[in-house]
Length: 399
Image (tube, rainbow, N blue to C red; front, side, top):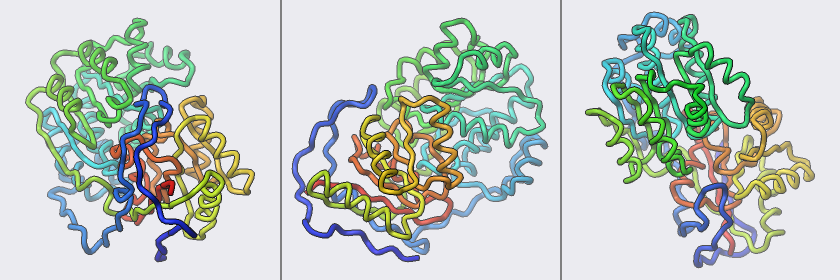
């Protein structure tokens, strides 16, 4: 179905100076000014996008037979570019630095080599770090899926959940630990996680972790891990901070870059101009009522504003819920499950909570509040336009 570009009923936007914003967690206290023209970009037609031809198929990779069987059962045939180029080097034991857009299959790109090494070397252990609870849970789910029947044991270490099950899991000496840097460091300092025995380390979304203020925790953890190890670092960007971490904690890495651009080519991007706060919510209501706006991720700035907007949408008859860092892990999981299962069609979120959401049928991303930086914008709109679909992103700009 074609989608008509959404334009406001009246005024044209005036582009002025940046407004400061309240800090969210340990994020920056002021916004980077982003010219509204950066929020406008047509989606490329599939015919205009260069089609990647893989060198390999999954059956070509020299991985453990159990992994092969599970991938065949799940219908994996042709790898994505990052998978095609990273997996062979990972299987050879090389350190891998991968630069790729969000939603390009990075988890499988490191999970196959990591699980293969663990299954072939019973003395090896793997640590996988991600910036958010949700991403850590998704990584665990994918690893569990492709390692079915392997006998490998694992533990998930994330905040917002009880320490009891985590302590029990660690007592069983898991071969794989997946978690967020803060909670992993907590266990190391408590003496409940002996990290020096972990000789495979994965950092996913390194740029996001550094942006969220985890640089000290990451440095502490990497310094405590086995000095002789295999490392996998994946990031959407390679800024100086990311480069320092990767340079200091890898050994002769192979660097693979399959980043295709600043934003997803498959996302149609536009602005929504508004005048007042009452006009803003009416414009959002009008947009959400369009039949083609099917499954929507709406970004707002603070925990309080996210909850307020979610309640307002519910009062207007929309099936909506919200997710932010102040919610318990159980509340966040229930909201995500309802969104994934289409029990609700609108999820209102803060940036921190939305990192790691990987739901392939999101049709629209709406920036009800503008992002702190253009990198944040890139990450936000990357939630739509996945798995060969065309997505849509709308950013509210005050006129």
